[in-house]
Image (tube, rainbow, N blue to C red; front, top):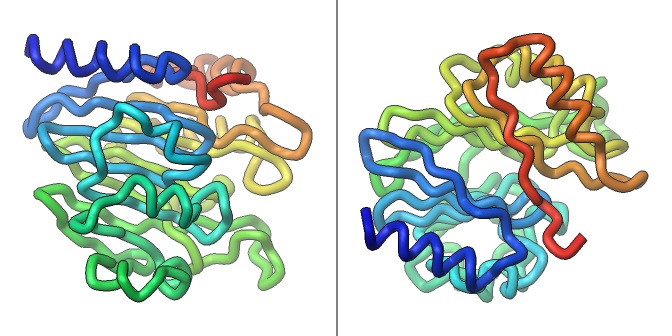
Length: 249
């Protein structure tokens, strides 16, 4: 416990612009939840380190242990940033990706790639990873995010379920989720959804904790305080955590 506290303090001191990490208790141990930037976050349990959509430059991850697993949701640069990925991963890092991302990886990475399509499940380092659809509504072949191309993910860690939305709207597959302990939900027009749609979707599947993230759009930052107000009014049992996803802003 003391070692973990010193590690957390050292990490936060090293990169003081980042929000302090939160902790989730699980049967595997305490999961550190570290917001990084926009769509990027890091989950750590014991010696297993999971990066989701690392992008924006390696300096953002300074002081954070190298990833055991990297999850990538889609091909856009705020999710799939090959320069940042190359800088943070090791030769043993497992990359969990949709096919469209795997097709863009260099050959040297492909021995460590796990390709998931929507609905697929893999287990890595004792953690289950289920690929969830992410797409725009109404469905269209010309949409920025078409159904089946990218993945959201539900991670099963020590009896807790953590949902990472990817770029999506309040789709039926999101609204039908069950037993989600922590959810990371995007909200940025015109790429995903507005705060009202995001709040309505969250109220449908009722995670215990929700983090609004990925909320910078063409018009600037979405009003996450409004999102919190809407969720709080709709269901008092959902904890909305507002964190700094845009360090330096």
